[in-house]
Length: 223
Ligand SMILES: NC(=O)c1ccc[n+]([C@@H]2O[C@H](COP(=O)([O-])OP(=O)(O)OC[C@H]3O[C@@H](n4cnc5c(N)ncnc54)[C@H](OP(=O)(O)O)[C@@H]3O)[C@@H](O)[C@H]2O)c1
Image 1 (cartoon, rainbow, N blue to C red):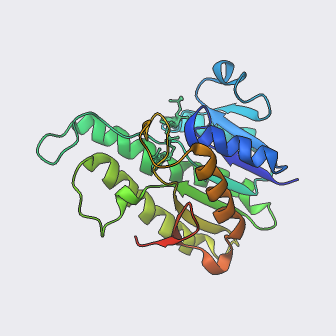
Image 2 (cartoon, protein in one colour; image 1 turned 90 degrees about the vertical axis):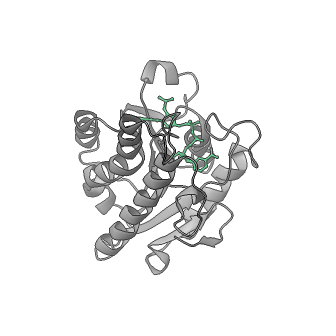
C-alpha cells in the first residue's frame, strides 16, 4: 500500500484529495491544525496536527514520520493573503504571512520529510501553486498571493534539480479555479474534478517529467 501525506486537509482541495487517495487504496496521512475538529470529516485518514508556519510543529511532524515511508507528498495548505494587497496599498505583515504559508512552509516540510520520501521506491512531491503566480501573466491584483506562488514555483523548480539524483520526482500544480472557501462559490470547477485531475497528474509524474508546472487537466503551464 502506498502512503501519501497531504497538508491542509481540513477542507477544500486538501480534504477532497484525502478522499480521492483513500478511495484509490492509499494510506492517507492528513495534516490539519485542529485534530479534534477534523476527526468527523476525515475518519478514513491518519490525522497529524500541523501548523505549517511553526518550525516546532514541523519538527514534531518529522519526529512522527521517523522510520516511515512516504510515497507522495502534496503541500496543499495555503492562504489567499491579506485584504489589502495591492502595489499601492499593502498590508506588509500580511504579505510576510502569505510568504510564510505559501512559499517558506512547503520547503520546510519537504526538508523535514526527505528521509521518509527517500525510503519510497518512486517518491514524488508537489506543491499546490497557482496560475496566478505565472510570471507571464501581468494581472496585478492580489500581489502578495501572486508573488508567494511565483516564489513557490521557483522553490519547486530548484527542488526538482536538487532531488533528481535522489530519485524524487517533483511538480508544481495549478488545481484550477475551484469552488472552495478560497475559490468562492462562483469558481469554475468542483473540488472532485480538481482532486481527480491532480491525482492523474501525480500518477503520471516521473523523473523524466520532473520540474514542471502542471494544470489539473494534465496540460503543462508556463512558469
Ligand atoms: N481554490 C482555488 O480556486 C485555488 C486556485 C489556485 C490555487 N489554490 C491553492 O490550492 C490550495 C488549497 O486551496 P483551497 O481552495 O482548498 O483553500 P481553503 O479551502 O481555504 O483551504 C486551505 C487549507 O489550508 C490550511 N491552512 C491554511 N493556513 C495554514 C497554516 N498556517 N497551517 C496549516 N494549514 C493551513 C487550512 O486549514 P484550516 O482549516 O486550519 O484553516 C485549509 O485546510 C492552496 O494552496 C491554494 O493557494 C486554490
